[in-house]
Image 1 (cartoon, helix red, strand yellow):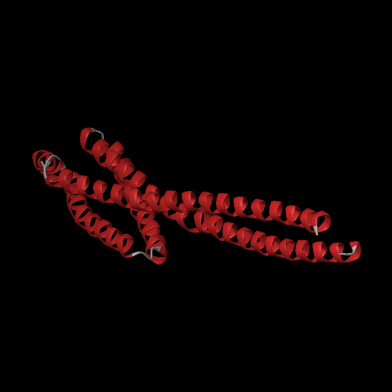
Image 2: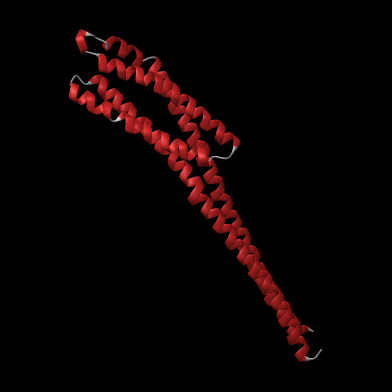
Length: 211
């Protein structure tokens, strides 16, 4: 075969393989971009919102505890005054999760979290009212508050905590799985593109020198 023909065949084969590599590279870049966007704009935010709820539950629990153990009316009012902002914070994060959670398991866990929250808030509001009534017109509610704190309210709070933890675990698992799959996809594409590049070089050399 003439040299010119060899070069033409080698160039043609190389061009085809380069086009394949280019298409695969663009497809890989697009998939990685989608995966990163999914992690950063969806799954990470869900984990963040869920953790915001959990942290707010902790913060509100401390406020209730402080309001109960202190004997100073001003401090009691300061602690109780923090609670409405906490309710709004949790509600805002729940709204964000409601709009974005799409999996059936995620929706189920989210509904359970909302249910546990409603139960807890009902008991907590009752406890707050008892705290506010204590000492007013000679009324003493300390024993009743203490009884609720260490029974029904504590149990409802633990259920609320558990529901929040379960939701965080679920969303974190999705995040980790997506991150792991992104890494696998990248390594697979990198290996395939490198293999095709080597094949392109070897074919071009073979055509040029052995035909």
